[in-house]
Amino acid sequence: MMESNPDVIRWTRLTHARWSMYIAATEQGLCYVGSQDKTFDEMAEWVAAKYPGAGLVQDDRIMKPYVRELEEYLQGKRDRFEMAMDYKGTPFQKAVWRALCQIPYGKTMTYTDIAQSIGKPAAVRAVGAAIGANPLLVTVPCHRVIGKNGALTGYRGGLAMKSQLLELERKHEQAIQKETAEYV
View 1 (cartoon, helix red, strand yellow):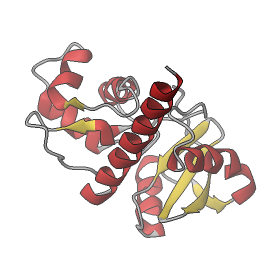
View 2 (cartoon, one colour):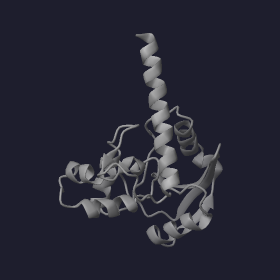
View 3 (tube, helix red, strand yellow):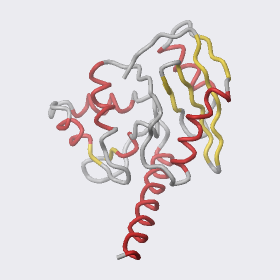
C-alpha cells in the first residue's frame, strides 16, 4: 500500500445500472470511491482534506480500468479487485482496511472480529472509526462489517447502499452454489 501526495487527482463518475458514484485515483492507484448518488462535492472535500493543493482533473480514459473492475463487481462478475489502490490513512486505519480486504466475498464479520484480527481486541470503537474513514467504498469492503447482534450499522455510503452491496454478493454466492449443485 503506497501513499503519495500528488499534484493531480484524476476522477470520473461511474454510472452503471442503478449505481452512480464518483471515483478518483493517484498515479499509484484508486484512492477514493464515493457514496451512491452523492455529489461531486463529497469527493472534492475529501481530496482537499487528504491531498491539500492537489488539483482534480476529470479523465475518463485513465479511470477506465477502475470503472471496468467496479462495473464487473456490480454485475456480479467479480468477487475481488486486482486494481492498484493508494490508501491515505494512519497506520492503524491501514491495518483495519487490510483486515477488511480479508473478509471473503459474500461473508460478514463484526467490529469485534476485525479488532481481534488486527491484534487489538479492546479497540472495537477505534476499529469502527477507522472503518468510517475508509475512502475506498466497495473495493475495501467495509460494507461486510455488521454489528455484534447481526444488524446493519453505520456506513459512509448509507445503510441502503450497504444493504444493496450485501444483497448483490448474497445473490451472486447463491447463483454459484446453485451452479455447483447442478454439476454434482
